[in-house]
Image: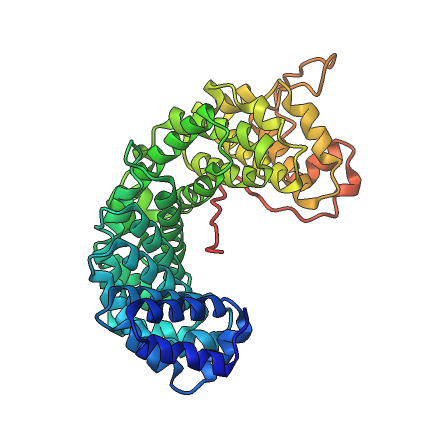
Length: 450
């Protein structure tokens, strides 16, 4: 129901001076229900003394009144209007203080309320930072209650998405115990909770995207933890058709992809923290699952496969030894984005040299490439020509199709200086010669935080 000024004042007066605690609590319940409506929220924040009264009830020594007052604030925090969030500023210090309380239900409610206020107002974030929100959240992460941990992950993820996070928030987070505890909560095993893992995987994604100090995360074993979690999720996919798995898969794939672009990976032996064949097998399982259930996640899997194969011959070897080229080619019709990523992965393999190209061609690759060359998407065509360039360079003796004799010239017709456009001309694709292509082999792709 929508409440007017008179009704709001009446409920607040009853909550303050009701004849008994039950009547006072009932008045706050009625107020909370009214605050579910945006019109009532606006009326409430402009009503003189209303927030002061609500904060007074929040800080009272009556547990039930405190809880209902916090629930009223929670309803206000759902507003998309920054003015409503800023009207709640007088309550933020108390919400932070109550995070160290004993009631897990009350702590959970405070965390979700803070998370909602954080995302809506820069003024709220500016107030909370000096009030010590990062240390308060770091203390909460040791809670034994899963509901508190999930609420904490939500509040932290909202804080990490702030535009000022890379400069003002993430350095403090990395300087706390939060990163180690986050990685512990993402360790696969019987104690792994999907809801908690999803929230903290997104937290880790936002931290990594900031590039403030990813070397720290790598030194704490971030790559190996995320790699093991990916294997665990792939195993779960084989056992169940739970549609919620993609909620965890997406941030884990992005975290791994972005960490692999860091220079510190090579210095710290990062790729060796991942078991080659198991990670490739896990990605294959996820690709097969998502092509049916969630095609929008295929690029996420392929992005990681691209970053794995870009600088690692061992991952390319795993891809070939597991005979995964044909399954990758079967993904080409899905979309142009998927096609480009598949072709980029194949370029990464071909770039490793003649021995790798021998596994790629002959086989089903050439007919598929002829199909992609007919695409209307210039990026797909450009990447197809790049792959042809690599194949012809490393295997100049190869034939062009069934019935064509294999040529083994003394001098290669594909000299080192051969350009992609020369291949297009040779193959009778003169219409493509006006296109501008970019080489994408050894291309490490980075995800943005959004």
